[in-house]
Image 1 (cartoon, rainbow, N blue to C red):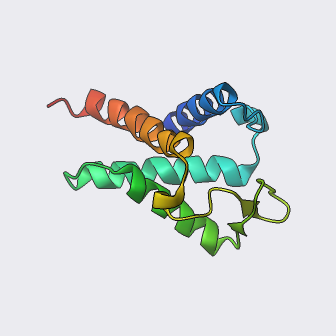
Image 2: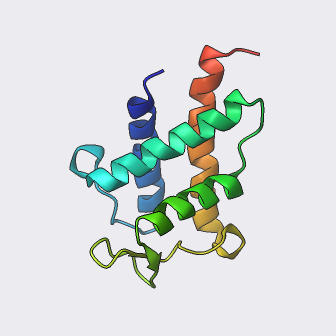
Length: 122
């Protein structure tokens, strides 16, 4: 499995979903900043590690992994996403995310799991 290709597909699905809820801030993969691409790659790796342990990936754990990655990179909460100030409105515990933001984690995990299952049929 090519992890970067899976991350690109996850990114494109996220971009499409965001567009459907009025968020037009997501760039196409080729125009996305490197930190954003790496974040998607890290999300794929996190989900695959969970699956390799025989565990079901949870959207909350996926978000918490993303949150820790952002914390280590110096990000904090902000009302609007600002990559220069490193502020993000989703920089909150999973339980505090609005449903429309939680759905992104479900979609991401579903895509990675589909690729996983294609290589590891039950």
